[in-house]
Amino acid sequence: MSGEDSLTRLLTEAVAHSRCHVAQGGLPFVGVVVTTDGIVSPPGVNQVRQTGDPTAHAEVVAMRAMTASHGSDALHGATLLATGEPCTLCYRFAADHGIARVIYAVDQDTAAAWGFDYRGGLDVLTPAQRALFERAEHRPVPRRLEPFANYLQLRGIPVPGTETSTL
Image 1 (cartoon, helix red, strand yellow):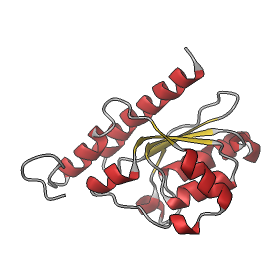
Image 2: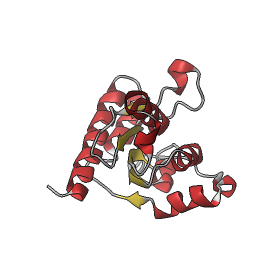
Image 3: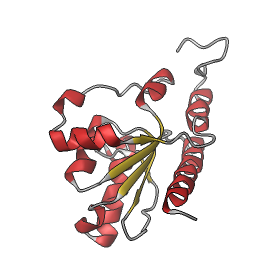
C-alpha cells in the first residue's frame, strides 16, 4: 500500500470515527496526525464544550496528543487529516507547529451548507499559514457526509438536499 493509499485509509477511518462520535453526541469533526515516520495520533475530537477551552478543536486536540506522546518535533513535516476542512485557528496552529500538509474530507463551503459555517478569518493568516491553507488537499472519501447528516438528523434539523431542507 502506498503512502497516499495509507493516508486515504486513515482519512476514511477518521470519518468512521466521526460517525461514532456523532452517535455519542459529539460534533462531526475528527483530526488525525501522521508523522513523517508513519506514527499515527489517536483521533482528536472537538472538546470545546466539554473542556471550556475554545481552542480544543479536533485538529488541535490531535496535534496536542501527538506532541504529548512524541514531543514537539513530531509535528514537523507531519500530515494533518481532518474530516472537515480546518478552520482558520486550526490552520494557524498547524502551520505554526510544523505541519507540512493538510488533507480533509469535507471542504468549508460544504460544511457551511450543512450548518457548520466557520469560513472567514483567512485575512489574518501569515504567509506561512496561508501557504498551508492554499496547498491543502480535498480528498472526498466515501461516506464523508454521513457524520454531518447524522448530526443534523439527531437534532431534528433538515438535511441539505432533502425536500424539507432550509439550509
